[in-house]
Image 1 (tube, one colour):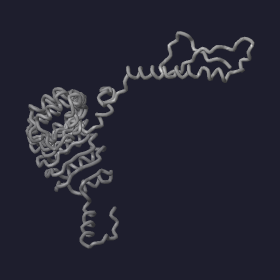
Image 2: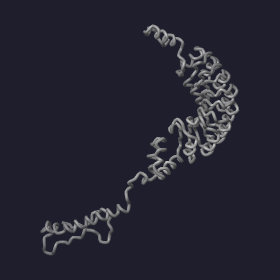
Image 3: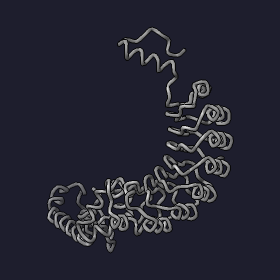
Image 4: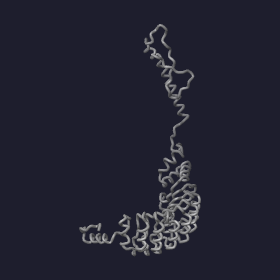
Length: 351
């Protein structure tokens, strides 16, 4: 039987099996003779070698301890991308109260945020809390501040916009304390802006919209719901300057918008997919017919409470499969008859 060999002077890795040079058979003796006795003779030596290996392994483990606490894990490689990114923002704010180390970890996470939605924190956010949350954020691409509508002012918003010029989506719905100055800073400092919500911002007027149209070449989605100071002239200017890229526009609840604005939008917005004209009392059938002619990409149209829009102007869009929030008159009559009589008449509803 061959003897296991160990090169002398070679350091073995911790935990590796060590071998000792065993004496070969004596001269004039059969190598196989007495092999069992020889093995038993070396058992104590092998046992001592194994114990020494275990001691070396334990010592090596003490020199390189395995992380036992959450904060012992690598922050930038493990905790930030794989742990904190999956924790709701409201829970992170509670987590930072645990210790100074956790506070530093959460602040590091907030500094690297790409999206911030104040609704994830709660329905009402104090001014000081928002300032702490966004004081180090310099990489935001999406910002939604609707829960701050009661107090958000230019002084609160302008520093955030200045630190985040790469913003692409901003939602300021209902923020009535802002002014034209904030919108000018947004348009001037965020050239990549694609989506903007100014719903229920009464301070948005024609001059503010002109500045936005001049400085936001990438604008695709714009919500101007209930911006009642806007008139046809401002919408016409928007269509002429940025119509080629617009895909979604809401002019709902604005009695000053009429067919002139809608027709100009139709002629200048070939990529328009969604248009909301809910409650635009001056919009009529002429504007809708122009949409059907010039907007091949249109997918949805909202004309509820537009009392001057007749069904013949909508029928062409219906045939194309455009989603319209107003049912055809025949369908409305059948539904009313069903409710009154309590049964469904045998009438083809596709007529």
